[in-house]
Amino acid sequence: MAVRRALTGILMTIWTFISMVIIPLSTLRALENGITLGGVELKIRLFMLNVGLIFILGLIAMMLTAFSYSFRGKTDAFITMAKYGVVAYYEWVWATGVRKMEVLMHGEIVHVGIDLGVWIIIVIIGSLLTGFLKSVYKYLEAKKKEEEKEKEEEGEEKRKEEEEEELEKWLEEE
Image (cartoon, rainbow, N blue to C red):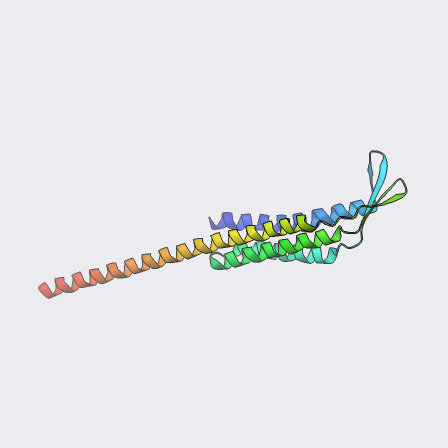
């Protein structure tokens, strides 16, 4: 079980970095350099996108993913919520980055920036709500396991006390 969790953690950590940093930024770089689409050269420029912040947030999310697979219990719940908070901020950075965007096609410049406004707020609230629900679930699960462990320990202590009392009675009889 521990080996499976460790391997899953390694894969998810790597995938987090690939999906949050490598794929989006390499795609963006290719679009900035220009691609040919249907025989027409197309270039896209984003002026307000903070690429450095996207890279840093991807690294932080990657580390939090690794930590969430390293720890269990209440710590895992906290790390999960922090990870979804980072993802929500990451989404906000992208949303502000596409506000001023240009497409160069046929030598013409088309301003296609978009303000996502309410839609990005809905996405961010969805991310935060998902993180909150997952972290509450993990917290309650950890709390339940702790309570079961305490009950089990109390039962063992009670059983030992009863055995000691029986042994004392038996010794007194002899």
